[in-house]
Amino acid sequence: MSERRRPVDRPRRAALDVLTAVRVEDAYANLVLPQVLRKHGLEGRDAALATELASGAIRMQGLYDPVIDASLTKPKLQAGVRDVLRLGAHQLLSMRVPDHAAISTSVDLVRGSVGQGPAGLVNAVLRKISRRTLADWVAEVTPDRSVDLHGHLAVAHSHPRWVVDALGEALGDDDDLEALLAADNAPPRVTLAARPGLSDVAELEAAGGARTGRSPYAVELAGGDPAGIPAVAEGRAGVQDEGSQVVAIAMTEAPLTGRDERWLDLCAGPGGKAALLAALAAQRGAHLVANERQPHRATLVASALRAVPAGTAHVLAGDGTRPPWVPGTFDRVLVDAPCSGLGALRRRAESRWRRTPEDVQVLVGLQQVLLDVAIDSVRPGGIVVYATCSPVLAETTEVVAAVLGRRGDTEEVDRFQLWPHRDGTDAMFAATLRRRPLA
Ligand SMILES: C[S@@+](CC[C@H](N)C(=O)[O-])C[C@H]1O[C@@H](n2cnc3c(N)ncnc32)[C@H](O)[C@@H]1O
Image (cartoon, rainbow, N blue to C red; front, side, top):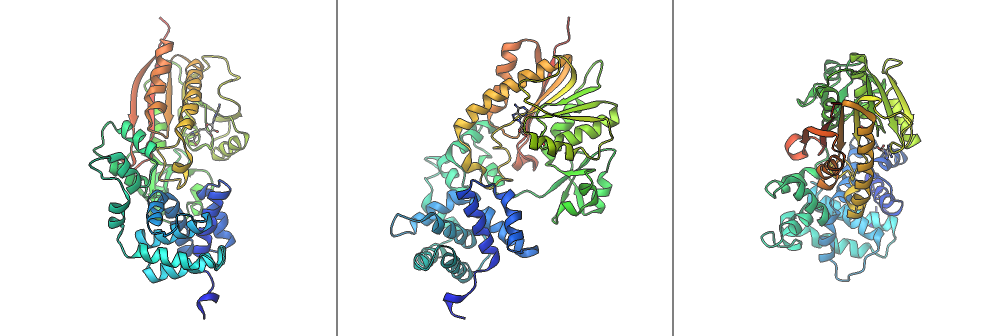
């Protein structure tokens, strides 16, 4: 068959569709991927290849773009052509695809998507990229690490510079900043939570899971579709990072004197923590109110709670900054605040490129209001856990310090920060606070 007529292979065409949707429609790669895989009829190895191509090219574009730019003879590049080159660069520099296959399929791909015009350019640029190793390219396109460590790591590990600065500040020093950034580029395995009283780790082990260690309810899957596991399909277990499980457990286990019957999850959507909390509430004779502002996400919470015994939990769709309940109603409150998500970058390929420092400023205002409401909602002596899936100090310790500093009725009793490179979890932060009992 002639070069010109060779059909474009479907995994690469699918990967390009994902890159296009993320760029043009602001789509989320993990949400658009299943639709695109279905459209192209991809399963098994082909689906895995398309997923790796799309996620890897998006995640690593902060490194691949300077490599592509250094390989161009003219500076201008159509966005659709750059997408094809990012996919080609990922195959050449980070996958075990033979050079000739990566280059010829990329040429086919640009012919099929943009046209014959840029085919020669794609061929020439990818040939140039293929002549050097990843390490050589990193040395070529990054600032000298001894002069500008964060600038070097930002390009070498494909993170925006401001994110590297914020993560470095949260870690406290630069010793394992590189390990954190590398961990952000390694997609995590799927972790499940066996909701107590509804399932157990033995059932999930029998379905192919392996115990992990931090949460007594967690198992990790080596692969496969979790939706095919009966306990997951029935809502007796759920897909949930172990860090999130640890946060929910912290809320339920913080020592409390007196009544312990009324629990609140102030920001509950899509409901992973609420489901674990509700399962534990059922065992302890407590009741959970799961509140979520966005109605469609409140629906997801209700679905996550479908296996919980009737009467244990109640879903509310409402703005947590203007709650309908009277102050002091609850004994324990979780405020899992809307945040930048910079602790979960390994899960969402494009999120690091979407977030801005201005987003963080806006979120911090909302986080402070929600924490204030959470404290108002708990009775004197009650427990509030403030959590984020971001380790950025402005969203974590600084929110807690600002709110506690102006209130005077609440003390911090515990705090933890998990890290992907140390704990194998998302970078979840949690502070356990106690509203002081009345004198
Ligand atoms: C980090 S997520 C919570 C994740 C959830 N706890 C779980 O484990 O599945 C934050 C949630 O807060 C919701 N949210 C944002 N602003 C809110 C508000 N003013 N009141 C209540 N929920 C809000 C968002 O829609 C989002 O679903």
